[in-house]
Image (cartoon, rainbow over all chains, first blue to last red; front, side):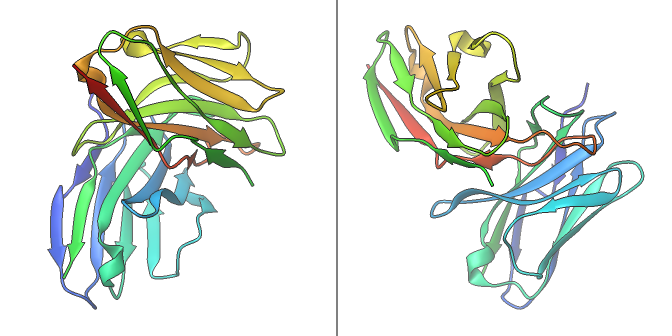
Length: 112
Length: 117
């Protein structure tokens, strides 16, 4: 069974640009969530999708958005990038409540 | 809203010694509890999870954890550590979601386990 696939693995962007990150969940998993990991703030929850609906959102500005497609694949978008958005962005998928999430290897975003 | 506290940011242990990584949580409802491990430049790998039932949970790589509801704790233990256990360990909690699917995870700040030869 293929794992959670995130693309790209590394990304360098300039302040003010926008970026789109992609996540393909494990086949059959309908829940996808996104997390931001930084040395200072640790792992922070961004949002969670189930069957194309955003059910939960973390405490991030509106520049951070996401969506989920009918095949459960998900994208997250960050507009007007700031230096502080530099982080490892992790996507995770789950088959249901309490099953835990399987994480991808992440996308390392560097904003210069 | 739930929260997770990992009391130690760093734990140095000698190889083959036992280790305990501490985790406390707070939540107004019943929760699911997880431990994840992260090796350098990688994503997170699930070590074990507690959903219900037996309070002692066994996971991969010889790790186990004990759920203590009265103390709202979920400490991770291993009787004998190996150099390869050097990694960052995260405790996480999620709340049951009545609408189906799964809820997001709230993580602790992580504990860096350092195995000394």
